[in-house]
Length: 189
Image 1 (tube, helix red, strand yellow):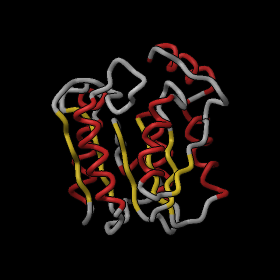
Image 2 (cartoon, helix red, strand yellow):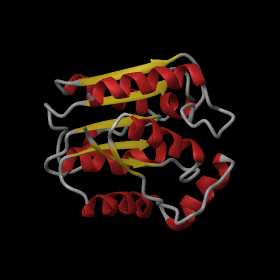
Image 3 (cartoon, one colour):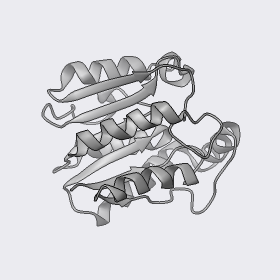
C-alpha cells in the first residue's frame, strides 16, 4: 500500500477533496491531506484565486512542500490544480518519491531545478477542453512530461470542467471521476 500526500486545489480542503482521500484510504492507502489554507474554503474560483494572490502562489507551494517534511521519502505526491506545483516539485526533486498524480494541471519540468526522473511513474488527469488546462499550456507540459518519462500516462476526459473530480462542486462529473478513481487505484496497485 502507498503513502500519499494529497494537496488540494484553489478552493481549499473541500468535502470533495476529502472524499477523494477517503476513496484512497478505503483501498488501504495512507493519505495525508494538509490544509494549506488553514481552514479557509471558497465556493468560487475567483474567491480562491483572490485569497491565493493575497498570500502568494509561492507561499502556497512552499506550504505544500513543507507538508512533506514530516513524511517518509517513499511517498506518492498528488496535487489537484493549485496543489500540482508542490506535488510536482516534490516528485521531481525529493529523493525516494514513489510516484505522482496530477489532476487538472501540469507544469513544464523545466520549472524545477532538475529533470523528471525517467523511471518515476506519473498519471495526469484533465478534461480535454478545460480552458485552464488547454489554454494555459498545461496540456503541452503534460505531453512533454509523458514523452520524457518511461512510466507516464495522460488521461483526457470528455468535457470542459476544471475541477471535475470534486463532488462538492457544480463542475463535478461522476462518470469521469469514477474512471479517474479506477485508474488511480490501478496505478497505486
